[in-house]
Amino acid sequence: QAHLANAVFTIGRNIGPAMFIAKAGAAQLPIVMFISGFSVIGIGPVFAKWSKGKRAAKVNYEFCLLSAALLLLLPLPIAMSTPGSALGIAAAYMLFLAEDLLPMLLMMQSSSLAQGSLTGHAAKRLLGLIQLGCSTGAMTAGLAIAPLVRTFGSTALLFVQVLLLLASLWPNHMAWWYEDFDEGREGKKKEVQDASAAP
Image (cartoon, rainbow, N blue to C red; front, side):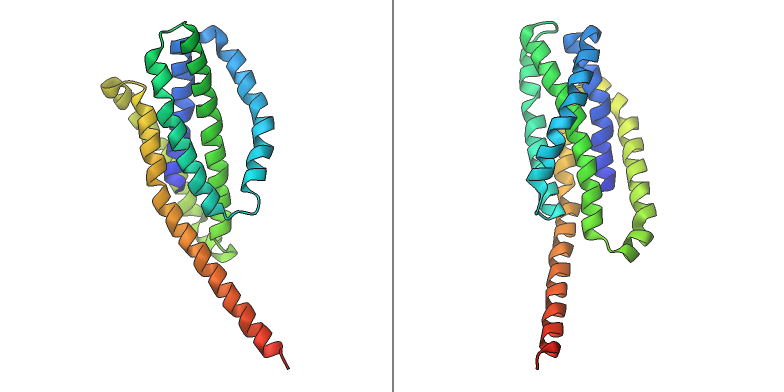
């Protein structure tokens, strides 16, 4: 999960500015960066409210599907527009904001998933592996970006992100299963304690 999430994050941080400059021009880059930074203030509380009371694995599952759907829709206005046109600039803004905000929220949610799935003892044992997964995800994605762009074009990276997001549903399903198992175990333990405390 950490490997795939960090790969999506790395691709987003590279493709967002590059495709924005190609469609809207470098002069507008400071504007969209300011809008993106300001958007974090508003989207953070909305995301927190939406995920409150839900299991981390369920939130991650829904968010991965939502992100994949948005990234599938974005190539449409990009392909239909020409650089400098109103549609091209609007598509560039949407793409930059999506690539800046969605991977950031995905990384935050991956941390929440690890906190919800791991006990303190397991976290101590697996922290190194999680960090290794993050590092290899960033390295693999970083090395793959240039060959993919040369072969298929920059828009293809959006579909690579979608595939990575869908692939991350498998480790997310395992974390979801573990949360169910852990909840059932805690419930049985509580039943035993209640039964032993009863007169």
